[in-house]
Amino acid sequence: MLKGSCHCGEVGWILETPPKSITACNCTLCCRYGALWAYGYIGYDIRTTGQTRTYRRRDSGDIDFHFCAACGCVTHYVAGSKDENGRMRAAVNVRMSDPSLISALPIRHFEGHDSFQELPRDGRTVKDMWF
Image 1: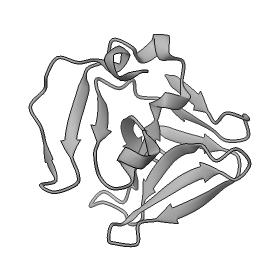
Image 2 (image 1 turned 180 degrees about the vertical axis):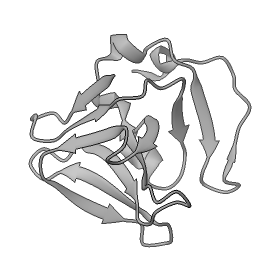
Image 3 (image 1 turned 90 degrees about the vertical axis):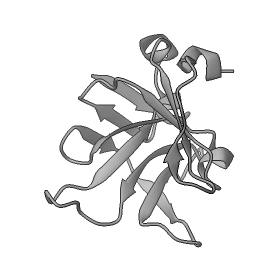
């Protein structure tokens, strides 16, 4: 289990399924947020606490990004529609968690700006991207 919270502690999340890797995306939002994502399903293996505000991409997409209204940290996102199994795909921003718990996990680079494809892995881990 992995836990995270925003800077002020008003919003938190729990990811019950340990991630095997972390995703860094370069889409127009993720590169601005600086988020590193671990995936699951809201209400299934991702649970959140606290009040959030949301932002949905204006250019396209079916994802609601959640952030703390008090401190502004982006904590997670939730798909706007259910998948074929009736679940809502979600991701938590692992930058809100204890770095020592995820530092050795490999990074998956997702090219979300142009091609929407996963890039070849280059051996970097979270500790290589945690500035």
